[in-house]
Image 1 (cartoon, rainbow, N blue to C red):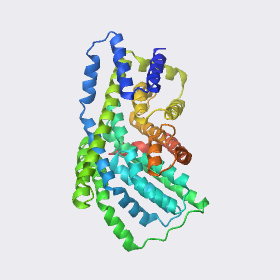
Image 2: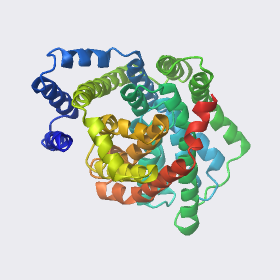
Image 3: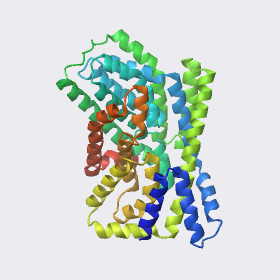
Image 4: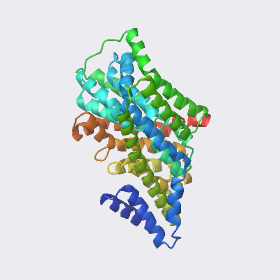
Length: 424
């Protein structure tokens, strides 16, 4: 009963417009205070939440992402992908997905991925006869690859909350990320087969392909450095953020000479604002998590779930359906920080691998990013594509179904997520 009351109070605070960081932290502090625990419990938890080396990766990845965004790296990626696959049925859509995948591998942000590639590809796709609804939906969904393909800021936060290896989380995201790219590309080509309004592009000659590839080569090298270094154990995720930031700065200032001083200042300010927001939410979630642990609410919730569901499959299905509903009105990171502390003990009881579940959770967060009315990527693409929310919302549903299909695939074939981290 206590669990239900606390959750109702929390959702009441959120619907009243209280920022998630203060709703979580304030409610957690009140529970600790009225529970006759030490008055130092909340500030000690707040300090320990921030005293984490892995959280250094958050501002570094954000800086790298914003620098690449300001420098217009997405234009090079899209141009190279278009030169190689643009002549195929649905070629521009396939090029868009591939561009999103590559940019995701150096950004860690869904918003940056959607905005960077969307600015270039949406006008091009619409000009070539693609349905406006399809183009907008594809970019909103393609942007979500930014939090599944490593590096990923939500994966860092998940690792901090669950105390699981962030490197394992990063490596586990590679397989499902490739799976989603294949599903999005396959759907795009199938869509083009049945929709004859779009115009086929002529096949690019080898000279153009060579030129386009040469332009994007520094970014591809950055991807190889990031993923190769992580996979080989050359550096930790936090160190990868620092390496990525330095490489992105050298790429955009020394090699490409695109990043102006004003662009750099904007990138710094944007990264600072987002970092502060994320760290406040993490701190609030840690206090809330400490409080509900002392009240033994996760254990009660775990017992309730275990009594209700007799199999692992039915429990995972119920959790995914719940996350799909919560994603309609909760921001993605908030959903993770509220639900994971409650669900983790239950998962352990059922023998669910936390790394595997983290990937499933991130995919469900991807769905939340493109489902109205709170889906953040919908608003990004709405601004980039100068569209209405109705247009973007109508275009995302096929891709939501593809994401859910990927969850089914990861459930029946766990090696899609677990093979790389366990074989590394």
